[in-house]
Length: 388
Image 1 (cartoon, rainbow, N blue to C red):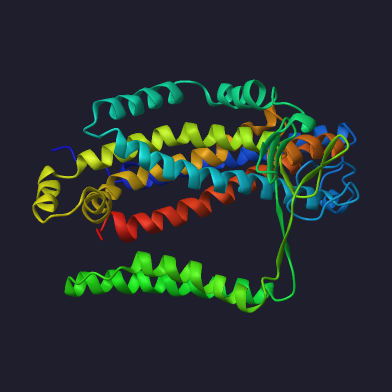
Image 2 (image 1 turned 135 degrees about the horizontal axis):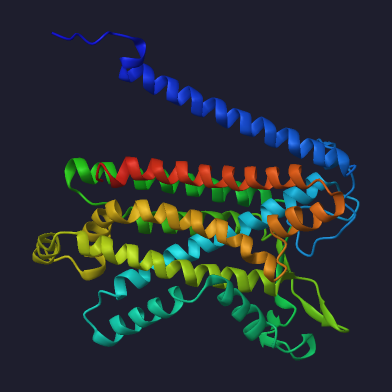
C-alpha cells in the first residue's frame, strides 16, 4: 500500500502561511519601491520633503474662518481652518438630514394618499439627480441671482439675504455670561441624567415619567433665570447696510448655504428610505397592540415603532453619515473653503508639498470617519442590536 510521505508542503496550514508571507513580501517590496520612486522624483524636481512647511506663513486669506486667521498665519492654521469648516457643514448637514429623513420616512407611510405620494415623488426626484448638479443648482441658479446688498431681502430689519450671503445678528457677550453658559451646561447634563433615570425606572416599574418635557423646561428656564439675575449681559450686533455692503453681524456665505442645503436634501432622501424600511420591518402586531392600549399615533411611533425600527435603521444610517462627510469635499466646485479647497488646493499650490498635504488630508478624513463610525457602532451595539 502506498503511503504518502509527510512533508511540510503537504500541510495546508504551512502552505497558507507561506502564501501569506509571499503576498506580504510582495506588498512591502512594492511599497518600498513606490516610496523610493516618489523620493527620487521629488529630488529631481527640487522639492524638499518633510512637514517643516506647516510652520511657515501661508500667504493667502480665507473667506470664512472660525478661528483667528490672516495671510501671515501658518499652513498649520490653514489646516485647522479647513478642518473646522468641513466639520461645520458636516455636523449641520448630519443633524438636518437626519431630522428631515425621519420625517420623510414616516410620512411616506402615511394613510393620506396625497401626502405619501408627494413624499415619494420628492424622494425619487432628489436622490436620482447627482449631488454635484444639486450643489451647482442651489449656488448658481438660486443664490447667485439674488439681488445685491442694496436690494437685499429684508426680514424685520434683523436678517438680510442677498447674493453675498445671509446677514444675521451677532451676539456680544458681556461680563457674567460665563455663569449663564455654566448654567446651560449644568441644565443639559441634569436633563441627560434625568432621561436616563426615567428610562431605567420605566423598564423596571412600568411607570412613566415625563422626562422630555421636564428636561425641556430645565434647559430653557434655568439659563433664562440666570440670565435675568445677571442683568441680561448679552447684546446683539445687528447687521446694517453701510455703503455698498453690510457692516456688523455675521455673514453666512452663499457657498455654505448652497452646500448645506444640497447635502441635507440629498442625504435625507436616503435616510428616509432607511427609516421607511425600518418601520415596515416592525411586526404589524406591535402597532395593533399599541393601538389597543390606547396609544396616540405620535406616542405609538415614539414608544413602540421607532425604537424597534432603529435596529434596522442604524447600520445604513452610519454609512449615510460617513458618505455625507466625504461628499462635503465637493464644495471645491463652488469655492467653499473646506479642507480640500483650503489645504489640498490653495496650500498645495502655494507650498508645492503635494505628498505631505495629500497624506494629511487623507488622514484627517480617515480620522473623522473612524470617530463617527466608532460612536455610531457603539450606539448600534448598545441599543439597536440588543434592544432597548
